[in-house]
Amino acid sequence: MADREKATGDLGLVQSFVNTVDLQDGPEELSDPNTLTAWLVAKGLLDGAPPVDASDLKHAIALREAIRSVIGANSGSKVYPVDIATLNEAAAASGLRMRFGVDGKPRLEPEATGVVGAMGRIVAAMYAAMEGEDWWRLKLCSSQACRWAFYDRSKNHSSRWCAMASCGNREKARRFRSHSKTHA
Ligand SMILES: [Zn+2]
Image (cartoon, rainbow, N blue to C red; front, side, top):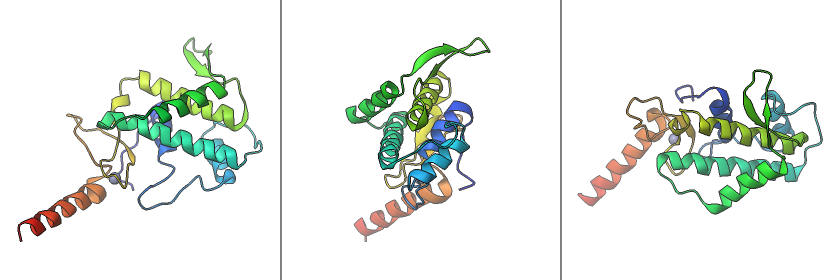
């Protein structure tokens, strides 16, 4: 997957969270509470190793898919109310509030600790990324089986596939086959 584009900063964090699963080919990185903890610690979103249970994992995956849905709006997909509700629940549960950092810049920070707080940090990163000028470059692959979050670096913002080498060509081959069938 070296040819798949990566964003940086808050946008990059949101992208890497959504891409903790490759829906088409696997693997699922957040396969159990331990791998969720490891991922959050590696990203600096979780301090120490608080207890993480199956319900935390369920919430994290629901949040991930809600974020995927909102990113889909950048590639023309509909955002469902259930996904908006999931995002608002994560924001509320973590007690996000505005704080000025030592650099004098305001940001959202969670009052909650543990995984709930970590989920709040992801929502805060999403908020910051959406305020940034590159948010709309984060898109979902047009392949319904893939829906990988990719960063559209193209000048005319026209990229539709996570990587032409995989999904784009697969889609072209599929169209070519159905076209040949129709006209055989
Ligand atoms: Zn794809």
